[in-house]
Amino acid sequence: MSGDLNTPLRSQTDPMLEKTFDPTEAEPRLYQRWEGSGRFAPIDDPAAAPFSICIPPPNVTGALHMGHALNNTLQDVLIRFERMRGKAALWTPGTDHAGIATQMVVERQLAESGNISLS
Image (cartoon, rainbow, N blue to C red; front, side, top):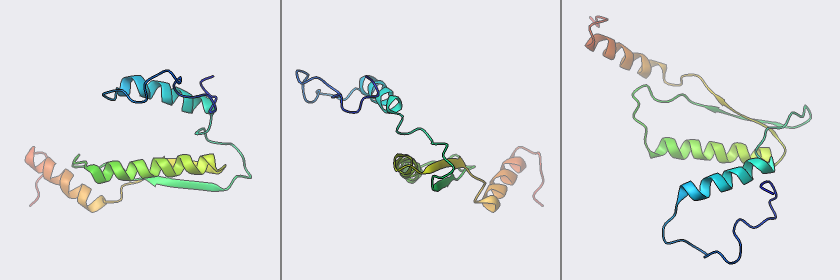
């Protein structure tokens, strides 16, 4: 039942919208249905066309913003969409794309803690 995509999410007697959205009520119900459908599961088919996205690592500064959230959301949508189209989709962690900036931040933090001299 939870995997049947033809089953309505709510009965016709339930109100259309609640006054406030309660994600703790909606998300488990929806996620269980999505997972039960198997539509987001990767396929193991050598004949399937490959599709991959490499996830950049988080910023060393830890300063995340809405751009990061948007980027990750779009990647997630694309991977799930391509899986639903039958491709062998892989969303994989990547390597550091900003090595010089990362090195500068780490060296500055080490210098501030007295563990390295920048002179």
